[in-house]
Image (cartoon, rainbow, N blue to C red; front, side, top):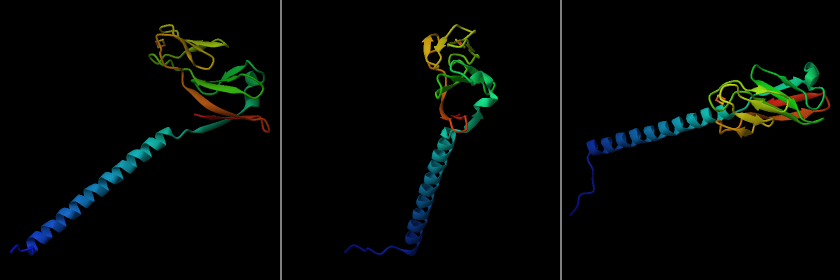
Length: 144
Ligand code: FES
């Protein structure tokens, strides 16, 4: 006849094993949550709102102005704006904007005014930001 009873020592060992495994599982879950939270925070965009009247160049369609050292806003129409980062996606040089397209002085990559690559060696488009124009107070919110 088989004896299904376990000794006190075996019972404690099994209990401790269960606690250790449970703790590790919980710790792993916490770590995954932290990683997920960090990834989420990295992807959270910071919104910047500018008053268009502070940038006379943006008063009419076709105008453009740098709103930070490397971020340019281009007014496409009465209510449409583009916001583009001017760091080349090839080797990180600052690209020049001539009013209609971007050109990199380092190796010659070109991009259209939307930041789309038109000539390499760059293969990735310039970083662009979502913009929201509020005509009521003439402000532009840029999700950077
Ligand atoms: S860094 Fe712009 S083309 Fe190389």
